[in-house]
Image (cartoon, rainbow, N blue to C red; front, side, top):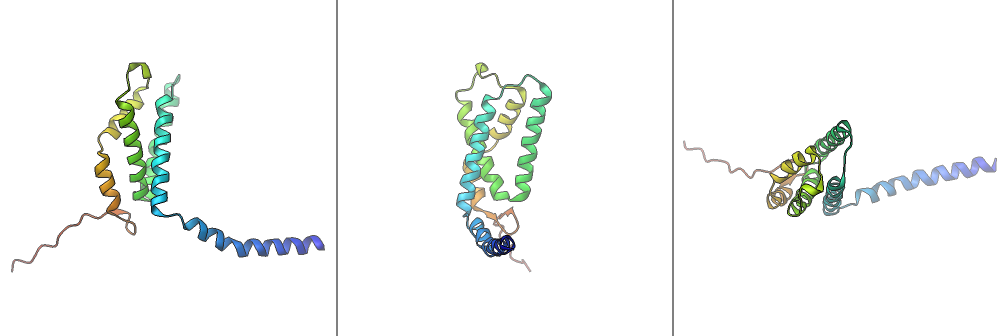
Length: 149
């Protein structure tokens, strides 16, 4: 019987604390989230620099999974995706200056490097500041034309 009272009290305590825990989780600022995903991207890029594949299928699976992650991230929250993309672009760009044949990257790595190389990090930073969080899209800042009549 004491055990039931203890469990009942424990469950009530958990239920009372759950809203507080959820509120604490929501307290992560946009800036912190952006920094987290930029750092995650840099870490992913560093890992990708050192990956060596013995099996073509494993290499293809890895890059397909990476692409799926980025697509899902883009659907989840565009600003978060842009932060991740910015981190990847910076990391790939930094490595490119010292990269040579000795690095031994696979063909998929070079395809990814070309993808990330097409972006300008200054443009990504500008896009990050113009994302509408409610619609998950970039605000274009279009000006309404005056009616000529």
